[in-house]
Amino acid sequence: MPADPHPEKRVEVIFSASTIAARLDELAVEIAARRIDRLLVIAVLKGSFVFAADLIRAMHANGIAPEIDFLTLSSYRKSKVSSGQVTILRDLDLDVTGRNILLIDDILESGRTLAFAKDLLSARGAARIHTCVLLEKKVPRAVEIEADFRAFDCPEVFVVGYGMDVAHRYRELPFVGHIRQ
Ligand code: IMP
Ligand code: MG
Image 1 (cartoon, rainbow, N blue to C red):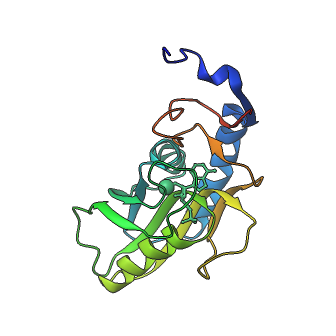
Image 2 (cartoon, protein in one colour):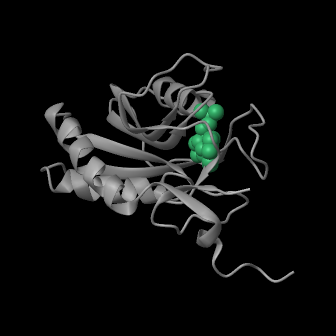
């Protein structure tokens, strides 16, 4: 079967592009208020790349000039169900020793991904680590962790768009949505 050229037609919008943009402006103000010294932003790929790209520009508008690095982790693989195991697919370039970090991820669900990343940075000698997620699902955590900053509470459905995928698709959508069954 040929690929559907307009997958967004089957996706119900949960958070629109304008809703996200307005919320990111508020989040950037909250982050700026912490006055974090020599900030290093670490975006967990791939899911957070769109969120991180928009957030750092909203942060720039609030006078923050961070360094930026990326950490590619895998927990979901091809399925919608977490394997429960987090692995490093591509590591950071920068040394995090003594650094104040803003760790950015797309979704906080079981907590495994964010906790893995935070523990890794702590083990490497990072100073203060603030965590920041676009979406938080209010489900029981497998690992005890809360985000310091969060844009939205997310309904308990599998979401796509704004960087998030199912089997590598839908990342290009400018909104967060849910695929209609
Ligand atoms: P956790 O490790 O269970 O907290 O899950 C977080 C990771 O799983 C995130 O980094 C996402 O990449 C992925 N994830 C969790 N829920 C969804 C979803 O609804 N859509 C897409 N990815 C998700
Ligand atoms: Mg992810």
